[in-house]
Structures are given as C-alpha cells and as structure tokens.
Length: 155
Image (cartoon, rainbow, N blue to C red; front, side, top):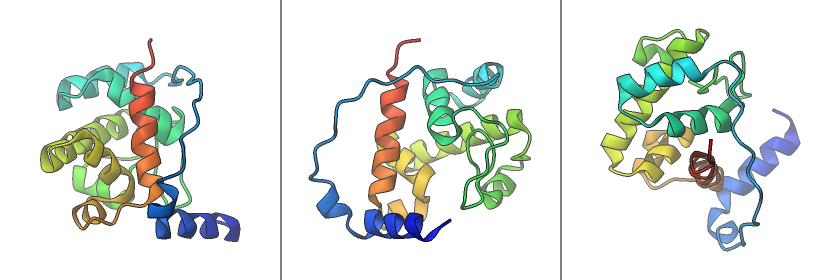
C-alpha cells in the first residue's frame, strides 16, 4: 500500500461522519463479470442458503471475479478471504471453489449474527468486531452499497 492509499484510507475511516453527508452520484452499473465462477456460486448458494445474485455481487465487488486476486491487506481469491478467516472456515483460499463456498458460508453466519444484510456486508468488509463495536468506516459503507447495487443488476 502506498502513502496515498494510506492517507485516503485514514481520511475515509477517520472522518466517516463528514463524508456520509456527501451526495452519492448516480452511475450506470455494469453486469458483474465472474470469469468462470458461476458453477461455484450455485454450489455455494445451495450450501449457505444465500441467493446466487448476492454471492455474485460479493465476488464482483471483492475481486471482479479474479480467482487469483490478492489485496494489499492480504485477502485472497474471488471472495477476498483473509488467511485467518479461511483457516477458521477450514478452506484453502487459493482454491476458487472453496473460497466462494467458504466466503458464502461466512457471510451467511454474519447475516445470522447481525440480523441484517447491510451490517453483515459491512462486517464482511471491515471485520465483525468493528461492526459490533460501532467502528464502521466509510469504505465499509461504500462496500455494502456497491454489493447491494450489483445484486440488483438484472442478469
């Protein structure tokens, strides 16, 4: 992560109250691209009870469907699982099928824990401890907004 990204991250997370009052521009949302992931999405949907459209939206926002994606923070694969989360889920984050299934099961657990898709998405992005403690930065709010927007895109 370069210094510009660090400053932007600090600014977004540290001043979320002032940024939340800014208007959200209207944009045209492209259909999610999933690079061969749809079969895994269907399996994950059956195992987790989540809708395939929600899982597709998370994959699109997290990695744009790239099975080998790695974030600056170390999150891996299509659903950008952190290594500790993957270990907790007993999945190999480098295996796309396991990543999508594990990530979907994790999101389903977060929905059950927080009782809200919105809070679960924020927790998926910034961590459940942060959400439980009310420490949600603007990045997590934007993430949840983006996932919900992509979920609503017609196939």
